[in-house]
Amino acid sequence: MTLTPHRGGLIILISFALAFMLTLLPLPDWARDYRPQWYTLVLIYWTMATPQRVGVGVGWATGIVADVLTGTLLGQHALALSLIAFITHKMHQRIRLFPIWQQALTVLLLLLIEKLLALWVMGVISQPVPSLSFWAPPFVGMLLWPWVYVILRDLRRRFQVS
Image 1 (tube, rainbow, N blue to C red):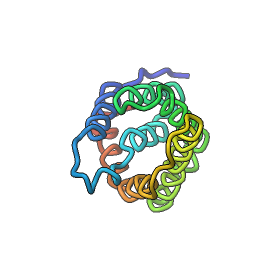
Image 2 (cartoon, rainbow, N blue to C red):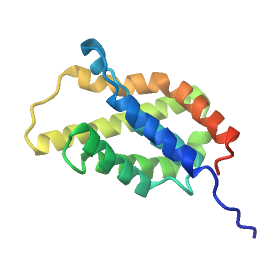
Image 3 (tube, rainbow, N blue to C red):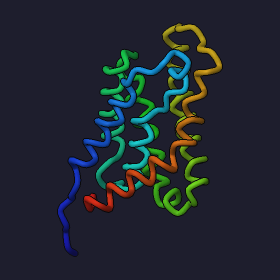
Image 4 (cartoon, helix red, strand yellow):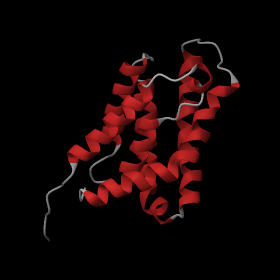
């Protein structure tokens, strides 16, 4: 058995940093409700592509950073992203075999799970029920998934992330 060192950790870190920058990017009022869950899309990709490196722990850490940056209840995103990373890790071999449109539908389900957990936390802490536009980002993320997948796959291949 040959052990090969992992490569490309900096690329993974940079992709998460870019996802957080896109999350914090100011948008016009009409577009704010449609902001995709960038860090979740990146987490899903890296958990699917490199499950030995990115998993539940990275999902939890990403969630804590998301909580701090977005000003939500500490642990809200950490809980959701840990669960998303766990589900993706368990199903990564199946998801990778899907054609891109089926992957996009799977990503939609994962993003909806994240939103359901956020809604549950909002209910627990007695926040008002959000408007219907609360459910728009998962659908935008589904539409963006093919491009996110292709761009990150190209980066992974170019920099030989393993």
